[in-house]
Image 1 (cartoon, rainbow, N blue to C red):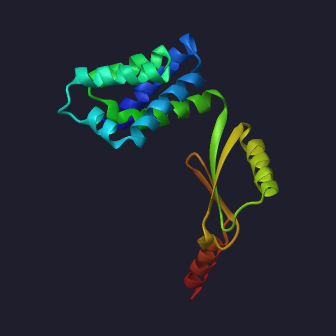
Image 2: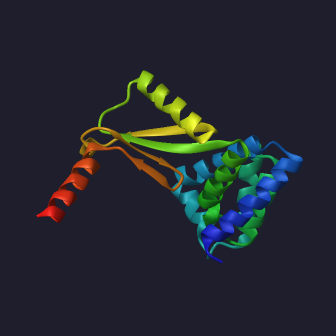
Image 3: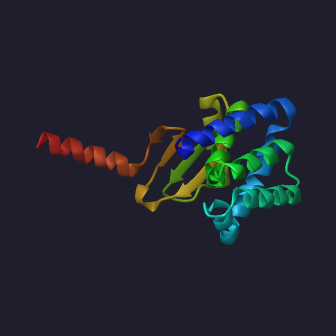
Length: 181
């Protein structure tokens, strides 16, 4: 089974358990803490994802880490299960899939806004408000700057892209002029 599909299945199961037995937000924090620890320690990540390291050793290390992190039982159990199955390499994808489920449950949508110049706090607040009104959900905005846009902005919400950049408008104008010649 591809790792993305496996991660989605584990995330769905973890989220269902979290809704029944625990706090889904705390579960995300615990899973995130474990993933950050792996990402920040190359030796640890290498040991826990290396197929030549026995599963029993991976499980023991994983249990020690989750105990020190104070992870909730559902997270500890899932990570031990992943260690037993030599699947700890899917933790980053699992975390991403879990966050998607949590955001959907909390009616939160992520938006990526790219502008040619940095946004002022006032303009960022206006964009945030308009996106919340348009989607009917809470919005988490990530902003980036790309001077190649020349002006305007590009907003991505999920798989939908709203491109109001001057660069794109100029490209479309060029295409129309080439068609007419």
